[in-house]
Image (tube, rainbow, N blue to C red; front, side):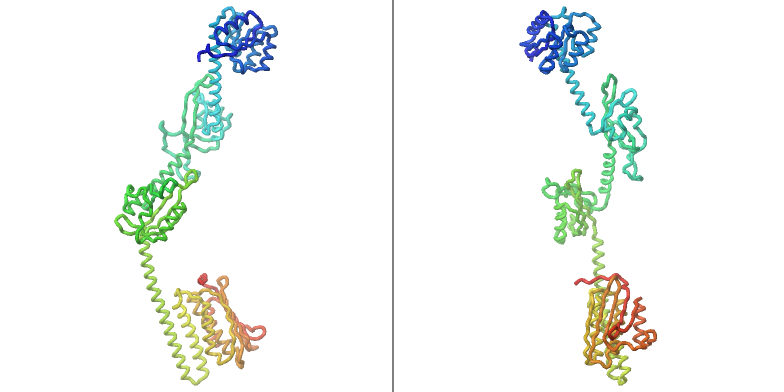
Length: 605
């Protein structure tokens, strides 16, 4: 739009009627329908300033000589109230120095009334308006740049080009480097430089960041106030700042980026050079299915497929007829749910040969906390599986052999027991018969253990509580002779190895035999209670009876019978203790305690 077509509002402060009419004519001549407001005195102008403000006026035309105020004082008052509205002075004074002072105080132009013309007035107004508009834009721009400078998340500063001294720094520089603004302003940019290299991590001995360069050369090393050394990238532009040449500097701390880059290169090197198979899967929502986006040389060597042949395929394409579907489903579920898993599978190479592989899958979290990729690491465990199969076959063979040995030992002991039984039939001496019966029971006890081992899934350990019933029943059949002896047995399941099971069984056999032989002489009925338990890896066997009890002169240390000698020797072998004491209310109590050599394992029920 032409300046003459635009409608302007003018505020004329002029006490002379003639001068005002002349100014009014010039304005009407140069501008289309201008809005003109007049004040004859400063007080009247002040009233208008207060009531209307200046936002309605485009320009103020001021006479320097008013009845109530004039000269410098008038200029000071009007300029102070004008804000961004340009003020043009119209005066009859020709004092050049005064005009210069007026312009310095913020007056937009200084025109002599004697030289005033419509065109000169128009030019002065338009220039003043343009200059003030430009000034507002500059101030607005400066404010924007000041805001950007202060609110920049990256450190920024201004330095003198000649001296390098800091002229200004932003908040991010203060926070990142640790120096206060006043400390910065007392320093130069060179004070931040150091030849020391920053560490890769906070731990010593992990190397430093060296050799990294930007497009202009090496990054700079800066030292913070706390002593930390960082690598920075500098972007500098030359500007004019407060009538001097200055550099506006943007600083980017690239230490973390370089650390991550070095770590990434290290990981890439590991992935590329490892002989293990590595595949990266895209499991993002955009992927149609969990597809392969990268495989290393180890994968290609292990499977025989090139990278181009597997890209965008599912990892399950390596499965085949011999692949366990349950294990494959476990792998697929882990990938679908983006959870870690470790499975062993039979996979197929490109040439059709099978191989065992242990596949470990792990989800990879990105910076946003999302899982868009998974890493699958495969190890060829074919040789291990083959060794395991050979070992299983060898163990199976040994188990069969050991089972047969226990069976043969049991049969041989049964044969010995039968021979002793035959000897009993040929004897008339009661004392010899008793000794043969005792020996026969001892042999049968050992045979029972080998029978249990033969029937057990383990050939070195047995569930020992099962032997109590066999021992007591065998003794009862041999010695009860029609007597009514009630038997109560309390046991709990636990295991003993064979080296402890045999002597413990023989001890229990001797104890029970002694009860049947001595506790119920001249009695037709009674009861026996046997308790067997294992607490805190300590085995306890207690045998009570309500028989005739021990003689008054009983002394365990004076006993010299074979049974006592056998018990004493076997208890010592178990590294245990035993006692035989009277029972309150009549009868005897036999107690055996010994530690379990190996931690017991409760059998599955």
